[in-house]
Amino acid sequence: TQLLEQSPQFLSIQEGENLTVYCNSSSVFSSLQWYRQEPGEGPVLLVTVVTGGEVKKLKRLTFQFGDARKDSSLHITAAQPGDTGLYLCAGSGNEKLTFGTGTRLTIIP
Amino acid sequence: EAGVAQSPRYKIIEKRQSVAFWCNPISGHATLYWYQQILGQGPKLLIQFQNNGVVDDSQLPKDRFSAERLKGVDSTLKIQPAKLEDSAVYLCASRRPGSFTGELFFGEGSRLTVL
Image (cartoon, rainbow over the protein chains, first blue to last red):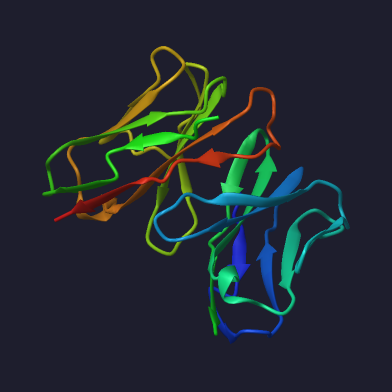
């Protein structure tokens, strides 16, 4: 079973601060996705990274896929209250998609 | 296009009772997933269908959980008998055909409370 560990599990910071969420595994993935989930809703895709070392930017969010395709990070610049939610990484391999343990982010106005 | 539809949104039952959840994926999406999400955790895959065939059910507790997708469209997940630890949100998701790295589209989930 492929396991994806996310850290930190919980993060509460002030509006305007920067933060990084990590997603680590001992397994190699063909691609990795990041989703955000708000209370009472299903996860929504933010980005897919497929190449080792790939960096993608989505406004204030920067996603990086590790060179060995075993890990990924999500960096948020100048966090806003609208960034609050549960962030989930998900790795694809062997035709399966495995979700990480999740990081609950709270941005305090 | 219409999103993934799930029902019921909420269900409260007592342990040892049975419950069924229904999912209608996005039209044309061949792959359908059922996930179990314990509060605050990441979703755990229960079963994956490709059309009406099972691709992966290795983490489905088959002594109490069952799922079917008879006509390759909508799907039903059943729990019988329910245990306290089955309290969770059951998420259904679908994916476009032939895209194992593509986006999963999720429904809003069915929240189960077992008393």
